[in-house]
Image 1 (cartoon, rainbow, N blue to C red):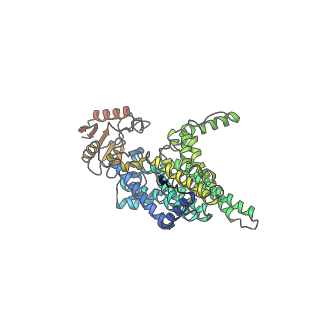
Image 2: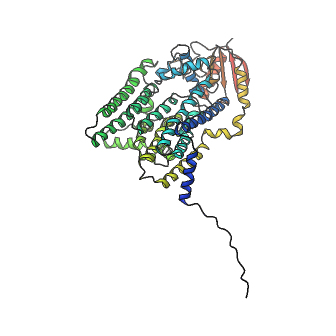
Image 3: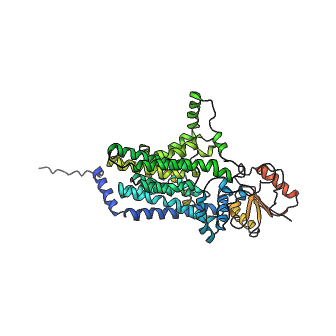
Length: 512
């Protein structure tokens, strides 16, 4: 009888089934901490990341007088019990006549203890990171620990917040956590808490009263829905929403039409011009068509809208909470300033909590739309998109070797600026200004006398003791064009200012 030779076939690895993957995610989720611990952990991690990134960029002279120097001068004045006079905006310029942000006075005690621009960057990092806490905790409780972790990290690393936290300082860092707490309360149907968190927006910036009004409109709408479902329900929710709408709209109107012009040296609101540079056409259907065309043109506006929807796999747009973005987006898209449309400025930071709140709302309330398997795909897409944008936006600085080195040009600038004694008056170029605002009185080198200080015909009425200008400053269009800076340097020299040093493109002059 012939023997039969056994043929062994190679083993084929079984691909894990969807059920096995679900079991793995469930087991992994059980190892994750609770909502509070996870929320504070994510917040702490991003606070450290934001602080390191922003301080390293500041040490490489990537911030500027516009805007870090401006806000430091204002907060320095608050810290000494004075009005926020900002010489970088012009002689005797009260910054409350530029934008309405009295909430900045809250930073004054911290600045008094730790004076310097870095203090502002650390405070901004803390406020931006704080937005992760309520949304992470809400996602954890409403959907699950894995969702809480993904949403918290995606929000913290989102392109809008990364762009806002990495460059200079801006008052909207207060609005980001306020909106995060407010929209979380809206999602949890805690109407009074949502209104209370949103009310301080009136003190952050004049346009945010419209966002406050949008919060009120959402509350009123939910109140009407409750009444429709149960006619015996109390009307308090609706009336609360209406009151918030009126307060928000009236607050913005008073700030723009009364308070800002009262404190502005020119007696008006400086940003009307940027809004009037938008669509201008006759009324009727032609006017509406022109308005619609301008609202979504040029294509950069479409890119902005895509970047806002993509981090949540485009599912956030299915939540009414995302409509809270409309007031901010409306004035930005209608304005004539192209910086408002681009996805690389700080204006987008306040939209990130609203977008991710919309995602949590959909995941929680629309289980018919997102069953478990599809939910995992959405979260995977969110994580992937966040990873891709993190490689493009400033958080990637942490893994670049040259981020941790101080350029020779920065060392030269610091050495030359150290020759200026504390307490002096200095006319500086834009990038050098924040290196001086903590210890001197700084104005822009291109400012002087004439009908418009920004288009000078002579030296300032009160000439500075020192003048310093960096020919390598990349901000060559605003606020100091190259030709105007050169003109002013020639004027200073013609009036007897002596050249103290001229090295690596940096010129240091001193009044004799």
